[in-house]
Image (cartoon, rainbow over all chains, first blue to last red; front, side):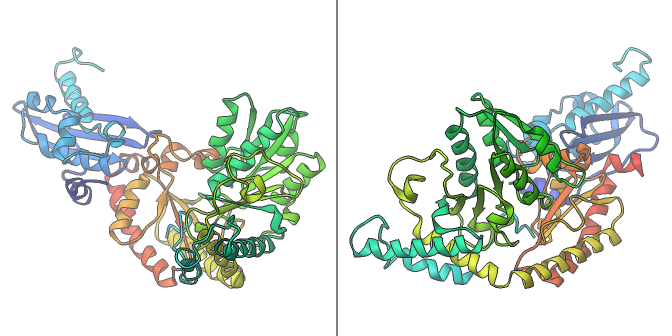
Amino acid sequence: MYSDKVMEHFFNPRNVGEIEDADGIGKVGNPVCGDIMQISIKVKDDKISDIKFRTFGCGAAIATSSMVTELVKGKTLEEAMAVTNKAVAEALDGLPAPKMHCSNLAADALHNAIKDYLSKKGGTDGEE
Amino acid sequence: MDNAATTWTHPEVLKVMLPYFTENFGNPSSIHLFGRRVRGVVENSREEISKLIGATPREIIFTSGGSEADNLAIVGTAYANESKGKHIITSSIEHHAVLDTCKFLENRGFKVTYLSVDKYGFVDPDDVRNAIRDDTILITIMHSNNEIGTIQPIQEIGEIAKERKIYFHTDAVQSVGTLPIDVNELKVDFLSMSAHKFYGPKGVGALYVRNGVRPVPLIHGGAQERKRRAGTENVAGIVGMAKALAIAHEDMQEHTTHLVALREHLIKGIFEKIDKVRLNGHPTKRLPGNVNISFEFVEGESILISLDAMGIAASSGSACTSGSLEPSHVLKAIGLPPETAHGSIRFTLGRGNTEEDVDYLIEVLPMIIERLRAMSPLFVKDA
């Protein structure tokens, strides 16, 4: 049911873990639907210099988390903000239809991490 | 290790079925030789099956499987008795063939009480007694649970139903062919069974209906099954079902002993090798081949994919495998928090499984769980 690319990322996930002195942390999902994703980033010169994820979830949840970290590592914050959940799914050669909503939230976690960074950096003008 | 989902067709079963696709292709309703030839085998099969569950041949209605049997018992009883009352009692851990059928009736003016279960998944017979109202027409409680294997006190509930003169149905799809079943001991009026759960073919099952009980038919047309279920009989399927049940009963005791030994070996192995696990269902009052384990901090589908890559088939209580967002209603009903329910795996052992299989599973499972836990944000938080 999953593409080869999904399976490849599931079995060899990129950038697993948590950055200890992260500049921004983003979290999405809830235990009821069975997916929780957490992304931590390190930012240097407005670029994502390092990124790591931890995910509790199904194969799609783990693969999308892995893929989004790969897609944005080294990219500018602006470029990273432009990455959508749909783009992540496409980069994985698609996801089964039922997974498109419940398990395809990795870009949201990334965006939350960036917003977290911006709010910390900019004082109180970011969103909480 | 997913034998509760389905089993293969036993070679001896297939062998007795094959002639009914070719030389004995007749329609049992036909008067001529071809028809008469197969009418006899359908009736012999009915007799064989009825004997093995302590019933008489007239009390067996062949169906397309367990789901149809459940539907016939529940919808058929509801519509046959709606002038007497519209209340049905069931449990919160039934198979969807029962639960969704009850919901169907609820949407059409019937009232349904869904009894809760304890942490092992047992229905309390006193709860059944207390739920009975003047307008209760049917009690439907499964014999054993398909997910966690818990075997219900059906006989006790049957006594209550009999005393209060309320029809009693049990979905015994997971039990028939695995556990000894006697409809009179259990005091049931209806009992559902399905051939493909006991090494028979898919697409055939039966409903036991106590003599004198008349559910309204669901399928109308011909006079087959004494006008209780229209449609040309699935002759090969019926023959196969009877053979499969006969084989199951030949070595039931021996087979159960084997499965229980494997089950206990597997449970022990998992508990020794992996921490933060829990066994769902009752330690002993469970189906001989059923092992249902929650692995904290990880999600079931991820475990299944990983197991599949190692050549092991199992199933999970996770939403991801069922197409809904909510985890299993059974695991929820026994009180598991959602994240624990999502990390639950059902291994169901069967005739093909050996001690080597179980050892192999115990060997690979710790690595799989460890890898997934290392990725899990829950594990970091709670460790």
